[in-house]
Length: 357
Image 1 (cartoon, rainbow, N blue to C red):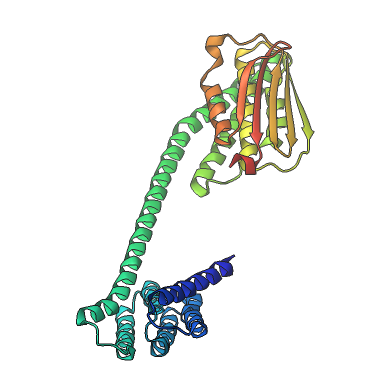
Image 2 (tube, rainbow, N blue to C red):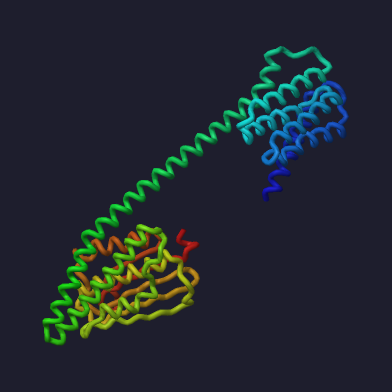
């Protein structure tokens, strides 16, 4: 594709040079010779990036020969454009390019079988291409510098936010989770009732799991934002932790079962986690089913329980809004409400990565 663009550029420049010369010519023009010189003066465009000054010099030599043979020829416009690109790609040598261009303009002036043009015209032909190329390069460098500064500022702000978040999570959440685990462990040793002991053991396990996840999150913030986070492979452990004697959580998987994109995998875990947490907190359900169905379009997550529907004022809480935001970031869809068979259902459709982004 790159070479096709370059070939079209050369062909277009040659065609324009030949056409302008033919339209401006007062006498009969040797068309084959015009075509040869037009193609020759345009061919150096192919190496204008790798050898900018060499390309401009070669084009200038061909243009000078064309002026001698054709007398009136517009191919010099291509040469002027190449001197412009020479300064653009080699901005540290503008005086050298200016000197070569000035010599070429002087040669063209001598080769023209007409009275010498005005000094102002010669100066413009010598300086204008160099000044234009240098100005374009300065503009590009200034734009690149502005972009780098913006990126550096964005990275600095992001680093400060991550540091602030890590510090506050460590100081508040980490401290409270550690205290909860210590208190649960102490109460478990002192309590003899079996059901209470199991509840305290569950509290201790959940606090340890949460503390571990907080530490992993802090490590993620400090090391790399794309580090691995909990995914659908951890859902069985999550269901086991939240199951109890009066509440059974069943995991079901169907479909292709291939590897999920990290963003989809983590979002699915968070949706199930929040849905199960809401069941534990607000529902009297005894049976909860988590069903993951995967195909080439994406992943469908369904959490269905047999409890009484949640009253409308409590349906749209902070947790549900958080689930919606996570799903919408992937261009997915989420619904939550009473199921037709009774109970409450949370349904999330997460597209595959190529559809999500």
